[in-house]
Image 1 (spheres, rainbow, N blue to C red):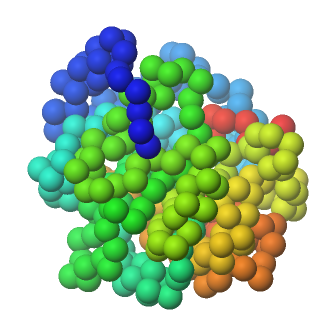
Image 2: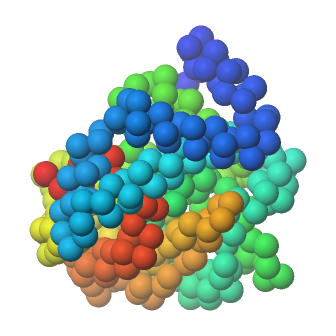
Image 3: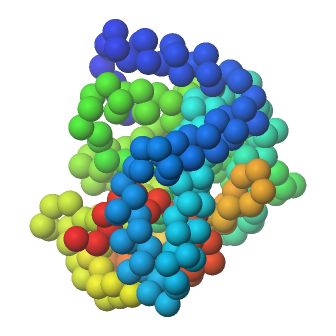
Amino acid sequence: MQQEKKSVGVVLVEAVLGLFARLPLGFHRAMGRAMGWLLRSVIHYRRDVVMTNLSRSFPELKYKEITRIADKSYRHLGNIIGEAIWFGGCKNARGRKRLNDSNLVDMVNPEVFNEVYENSTNMMVLSSHCGNWELLGGYFSYNHTDVPYKSDFSEIGVVYRQLKSKLWDRVIADNRCNSIKDTGFHGYLEATEVFRFAISHRREKFIYIFPTDQYPYGIATKHAIGKFLNQDTLAMTGGATLACKFGMSVSYLRWKEREGGYDLELVPLFPDASGLTPEQIMVKYYAELEKDIQDQPWNYLWTHKRWK
């Protein structure tokens, strides 16, 4: 992703964040807990949206239980912010070692990744807003096993939607890529450009990580996939459509929260999407996502309107 020269505002914001990013991860997780409390109890950040989403998703739960999940989800949101700032300080090779040593994220099944990779022309990995998606740029730094990856940063890209604020779009993009700027990483691929990128790289093996649980924007992207968390749901099918067109394998990226961080697991869904419809892929994806949310309901971003 080629970027313009940084503005003065971007330079100043990154300088401040850079100072905080040098502090230990424990500080940032403590700061995250404080931030979560502030968002929940003082600012009441999107409290109505959170409670409405949770109540409709878990109609069998009593108000006290819904409130408990909501409170825990704000703490999780605070952790996301704190961890993301710390992640921005993990620069280049030394930063990747810092990231690896922290054990913040642990990829639990690299052997499954290798098997899917070897048997795919291209890989489509569908992600969500469980766990901490701001850490996806460090994907290959999270392997703490004796099984080495059969790929590297030069063959992976993370799809994102550009923010309206040019300042914060640049700051967050830089923050996500600090640790991997020297690896040949293609970077974060803007959603409106990813199809063109896929065509130009169709003869190369490539891994697309595609967050795809947002409410669909644009009429052409809206597809009904039935019930998700007890609600009729429209899905974005950009990643699934790409996988069908180019015959990619499709996998789901599972985030499980644990003490001090996350376990990351690749779950194969389809070895070849060329004979499928995007709707079939998204139904399977949302079934996996729902299982994870049922298991850890706080480990999800509830502050956005996913059903309108």
